[in-house]
Length: 86
Image (tube, rainbow, N blue to C red; front, side):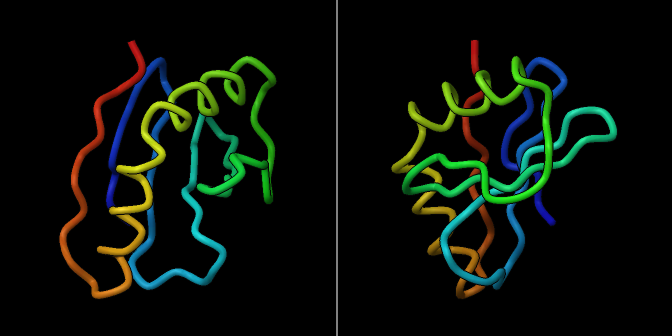
């Protein structure tokens, strides 16, 4: 599963040919969560509240890039790195 971004100890990854709805995975320490790209809703898993806030803030800024990567992952084609939250 390719890593597409990393910030504040959070790693963002996306699987190739993963199931719908369009989503990405966020890892923080031993915690993992899956977020919808369209709604930014937490779909599965658990992260600390502060990490969820950071992930959603990052994803809001990069929604278009996340959807492009989701479409690339369907083919599969290499995924683009996305700028970290600063």
